[in-house]
Length: 317
Ligand SMILES: [Zn+2]
Ligand SMILES: [Zn+2]
Image 1 (cartoon, rainbow, N blue to C red):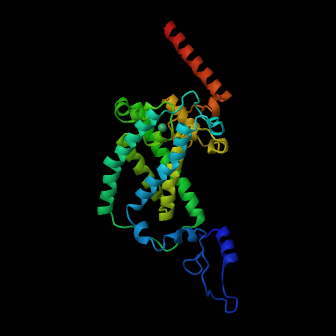
Image 2 (image 1 turned 180 degrees about the horizontal axis):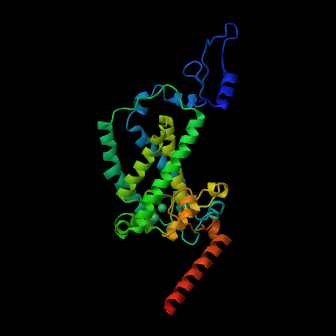
Image 3 (image 1 turned 60 degrees about the vertical axis):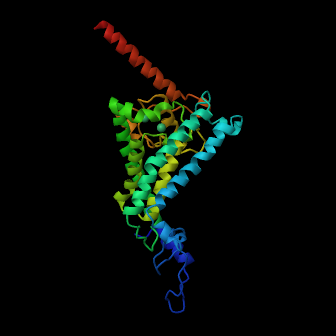
């Protein structure tokens, strides 16, 4: 279904010939006359590069480059900007500055993960997977947006279930997920400080979630980048004023995941917060400058009281 907005914009920028009422020339939003897509100019950027864009290597090269582009500024803030108050006042755990030793350890594992796992998977994909058949038309803007949001909900649930299981089953925690928890105060490089099994699981969830909605290729690539962006946001260790948890009540994001690294039995959900809320594993986050909001103070008081009652109960028994 063509959205109303697209029809309206299409009509405005149309170059229809009023003389004979036929389309003499296409607008930039039409790859096929009469098929309006606001995203057509973006999708048309592929023209001339189809050979590369359709290659099975394209999503991997784009996502790896985008990942490093996302984490590098935070690495600079952490290591070289310790006295830059304009950014450091937003640090969630200011008492735990990021050290070069922590960053280099994460870099080494990320490097080996890329060499030993991502590179062979890329080569296998390149050799065995056929090139993508690229459609001529861009996706509708509405489909582009809702497919990504829906895929994020699916990914969020898949990782929530994976994550909770890998905390509850001792063997899985010790042998797989504990590696990621070597960092109690996360920083951008910790995003992919992962056991290979976790890295592969996350890769599979990210790739397959938009398939459920038969998302357009452009939507799939955009979703992959969105997934990286929100995963990095969860690990940067800063609580910035415009981050989604300030304006979206259903978003857990950075402050909740930072708390998960401090208290690993809480906040299993990576992005949203409804599953944690429903299953009673949500813990409020610490805010910029290490500030503890009242909701966190109340949570701690409640937990302390629960422990006191349990101990008292045991004594009586
Ligand atoms: Zn984490
Ligand atoms: Zn965890």
